[in-house]
Every structure is written in structure tokens, then in C-alpha cells.
Amino acid sequence: MCYLNNFFFHTYNQCSKQLEQYAAFYDDSIEFYHDKGGLSTSKKNIVSATQKNIYGKIMRELVKGSIEVYPIPGIGAIEMGLHIFHNNQEPPLKQPKVGRFTVIWKKYPDAWKIYRVISLH
Image 1 (cartoon, rainbow, N blue to C red):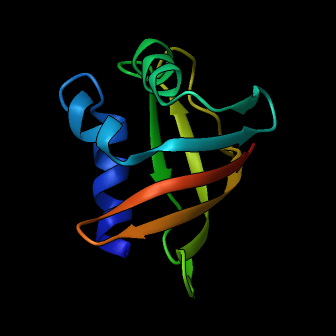
Image 2: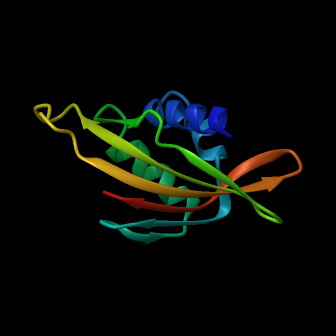
């Protein structure tokens, strides 16, 4: 699971170069809850917004040691952790703001998919 998350963060930060790989992480029935943007249920819109608003502007960094993963029988796993966003369009913050995320990963026979997300900044 940690390998998946590291690869997901890498594709998120490089979404223009790895857009298909980034999009492949999301389940077709994704629900993405964001404390600023509300609920998103369109995989296409989530990927498009990431490409438009993130690529070349913002890098997402996992807070080392913050990841917790718990198996959920019949679904897959719940992952919780902390992340920091670095906006290269603005001066660096002396104390970057740490956000929280929770991801429900759904296990399919041939893949793990991001099924539900809660992102709090």
C-alpha cells in the first residue's frame, strides 16, 4: 500500500507527464470530498482540475511517518495521513500548512483503486 501511495504522489506531482497513470488510480465511481471545493464525483473532472490547477504550480509532499493504513474486509483498505502543498507560484511559507487526507482504496482482482477521498487543508 505504501508503494502505491508513493507512486500516486509521484504521478500527482508529474500529472502532465503521466496523466493516464494518474487517472488510472481513480475508481470510476470516485467520491472526492474537499473542505474547500466540496464533493466531486467525476473522475474526468478531478483529473482535468489536477492537470489545470496543479501541474507546474503545486507539489504535494507526504509528511514522513504520518501514514496509517488499515485493512477493511470486503473493500480494501483505509489510508490516513498528512500532506503539505508547496505552491511554486508564491513565496515559500516559513511554516508550511499541513493538511490531512483519508483515502479508501478498493481492491479489485487486478488493481487497487482510489474509491473515496477526504482532503482537509
